Length: 481
Ligand SMILES: Cc1cc2nc3c(=O)[nH]c(=O)nc-3n(C[C@H](O)[C@H](O)[C@H](O)COP(=O)(O)OP(=O)(O)OC[C@H]3O[C@@H](n4cnc5c(N)ncnc54)[C@H](O)[C@@H]3O)c2cc1C
Ligand code: SF4
Image 1 (cartoon, rainbow, N blue to C red):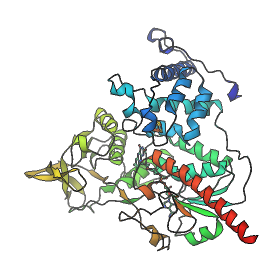
Image 2: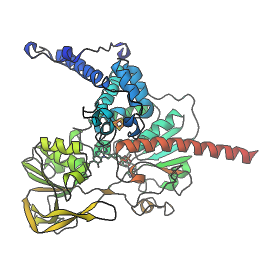
Image 3: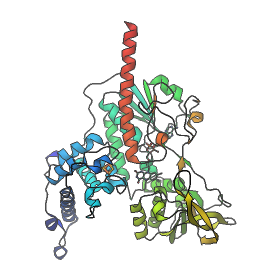
């Protein structure tokens, strides 16, 4: 049985594969590698200084008890480390892989700040939970008691999935609705496989199914089912639909064949990796192989596009960003990875026009410089006189960020109030929208953000929904007395 497997810690020196005596069989290599990973995790975990004020924990949006699980890992008590880690995070192995740790926990590690290199917190977190899955410690949720009340969740991204798990733990009947054919949201169709393997997400969804969560896929709320129907069916509803309206480039030539929105490009690549039929990829339209590619934008989505194009075998990949490296929104670690893989960055360069007649042949860009700070406090880029230059390309990808869709219109619910950015307004304390019993979580509330924040919002929303349903039940009981 998986749980009876022995965990073995060996020193790095013991575990490092010996080049002189290469393992003969694949299984030998797997065993040596597993030992190496265990030793590495223990070695990193033992570097934690257990400082009095854990800045790493303070800067983790989930407030993960990092020093505790690092100590347990260093002592070889992995199952306990898993229990502590999973108490505050519904997907530690996902966050361990894709959190921008340089901006969160690891960037605030005191060892990093004293110049000795951070404890690699994300890698240890990933290792603990990957091991937990392997050992059979990750089991379906079994609520202490079942409740009759039900909650409908719109959106099967990390916010919706985290809320579903927390609500199931409390015994609620949970149904998750999603317009896509697979659960996972951007974990499946946005973030590329080389950063987050899709089976890692699928096993989380499968565990929720085994925990009693119902999934209704290919169900766009506002199309096949209305919000009013969901409100009538469930005791509470959570909106966790993410943000998907791509910010469009405004320049001559943007409609030319060969110019694509980032999500169209990334979704095709992810679907291909999942084994789906993707005619637009197979006929070469969305395949970067052999092409000169220009990606416009400087966020994490742009980094995913450039690194995907490299993996597809692009002839050259250039990233065009209007500010400089220090002022880009994406993770600097991701930029370093991209540069190492051969991506060329054109900093301080803004697109001016897409060139070509019947298809894209290049991008005309203006050289920029950073001027005085604008109202937001950021130095505004402005064009350098006579600074235009052309970048020839066969494919151009727009990765300028995302805005929310018009949910009040899509849901036929004008009472659902939104901010000036189009994100849905929620009470800051209760996470309830302007509609009674309808809550919000994730990107659709805070704008395009991070997986770890979506998980945090989903967990908080679940707690608030439970309080709301209990309060309603108490009020109904009092009224009946
Ligand atoms: C390309 C890309 C790369 C990224 N990389 C990272 C990264 O490395 N690290 C990181 O932390 N974050 C990353 N992010 C951000 C992160 O993915 C999001 O912040 C996070 O997924 C938001 O979670 P969510 O649950 O709010 O929304 P989503 O993950 O977007 O999920 C929303 C779900 O709602 C469904 N939905 C929408 N409308 C409807 C409707 N009307 N009816 C039914 N279902 C609906 C969608 O189909 C989707 O499944 C990346 C984002 C992108 C686009
Ligand atoms: S969830 Fe993210 S920020 Fe928190 S400890 Fe894990 S990797 Fe760091």
